[in-house]
Amino acid sequence: MTVRLATVIDALDEAYPPGLAASWDSVGLVCGDPDDAVSSVTIAVDATAAVVDEVPDGGLLLAHHPLLLRGVDTVAANTAKGALVHRLIRSGRSLFTAHTNADSASPGVSDAFAQALGLTIESVLEPSPTDPGVGLGRIGSLPQPESLSALVSRVETGLPQTSWGVRAAGNPDMLVSRVAVCGGAGDSLLGAAAAADVQAYVTADLRHHPADEHRRASDVALIDVAHWASEYPWCEQAAGVLRSAFGAALSVWVCPIRTDPWNVDNHGWGK
Image (cartoon, helix red, strand yellow):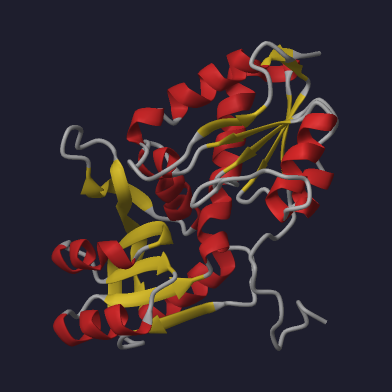
């Protein structure tokens, strides 16, 4: 069975409105004909060559991160990203991106992240000025208070394993009952997390100096994970959106390939 690509796009735009995307972002259809029929949707955080290999001919790849974003002036087939675009087009495959619009949507990336950690979501960490129901990050509560060390273990268990692993800053014995989260790079929300009524902030890509400045001024503990791991739970959320919309008429699956660029560690992942 097949569904018109334009109809799939309508469902994705309803779940992740393009108007929520940041002004610098590039979201929506990258390649493909809206009038074409698609028989499958493959969902991944990144459109890598290995992921594209898993997309059936005539299928749609829904990626969270844009393939073409900064300084793109060619998709020549002898460039890394251009080669992917050519491969997709030649086999009738399409590519669609939901990035910062999926970050801010409700439910969105941070909702899926929080749910993977077993949090009950209470509010948006940094609400949109025009709609407090959407925005970046989420604030949630644990089933019962637990130590920071136990929360770190919860994060390790709830997310897929990566070379980056999980690292934390704070008193390991402090009790945590409310947690702020942000899927993806969360440096920009350190101030919001410090001002929220939480004991810990879980995010990705925390840099040394912003983390150091935060720890000097705030008692809110930090837990840092791999960027890819924090956003991978969204893939299953997006799959649920499409399965609910199309049922058996559209094959939808989450690509299990780990697209985290860090691939060598001491735990056997890179061996």
